Image (cartoon, rainbow, N blue to C red):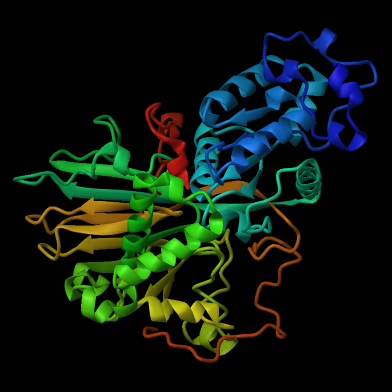
Length: 490
């Protein structure tokens, strides 16, 4: 424990001794006599392939400051294996007071894009731990919506000692906040010809955001149907915005050397929006792919009552939003004024209220209103469950995106029962700074309704006034195949 003795008192508050992390170390030899349990013990998971070279540099800094064995490179070891091993060891040490206090106070830091952060959230959720650790996110991706929503910023951080110690200090002072989980079910009849499978496995995102075919023994499996399930924490989108995102990710896979800089990545994204016709959608985007022509949408409230949701015919993209951050920090829902909230029975967009906000966009020009003060999309609804029933023969494919991970989804042409359903599914713990933009309905410091001094949207353009799912997988749900390059997790 020579390294422990050399640490500052500040860093000792985060340090986890090796015997807690591995059963191979012996406790009596691992701790000096004056050691006290840390107040904020952390496990650090870093996607070394995120943020250009920044991921690798962060690993070196964290390992220099803390115990090498509490810092994990996701390119070398997956979080499900790490957490299984550590929690099995903690169970073995349940009578050890030092280890018990670490277990009770344990936190997780994850550095990477939204896909990497979602991967960790999914693993922690799936392992069904008795004391699941809250998670802080370091922004190393392109969008960084999860970190931004909880106050950790949206720009790539510094990797030097001072920057890392500053982040650790924020983690020490952070508050815990629960956020809703959302389960996705996709079901379609087995087509008479061809295939409705998602594209080749390497074309799909491989964190929790991927749809995974359910096993024959899964209770959701139905004979004669293909059934997939997955989940998200930030958003699910369908339509043209997902198409642009898919073009960006495809380009990055073909030419990874061109995507080493966050600013360059974002400018490339805008250029692709232009070339894909998102700014001239009425000319280049087939009307058959507008949401109303593509699918029938139904929503259910907390009481389980379903009704049809009217989608204006001009809407080309629909976003189901859980957090107040989308596409690099934008807030499509905005802040409705009190009269609009009352007339449409809307509530503030809390991240833990069991409701998801449904927003529509006509084109990129419509999306640009988000850059203006109080700008927002077309508020369609708030719902506890949402169902998309795709029209027969409308198109042979569509584009979807969850938490920054896009894919091209084939649709069988001879089946009118292709269905996607989103439903609320429990909560997970996040770490948040005290001035973060996410709001909890259970936080006494957060007003139940928006403060009277807050700026509201007066230029409202709104066009429209069963049985609970079990967890969406065992821990295997979130395993990423060995052959997958995790740099594609954004």
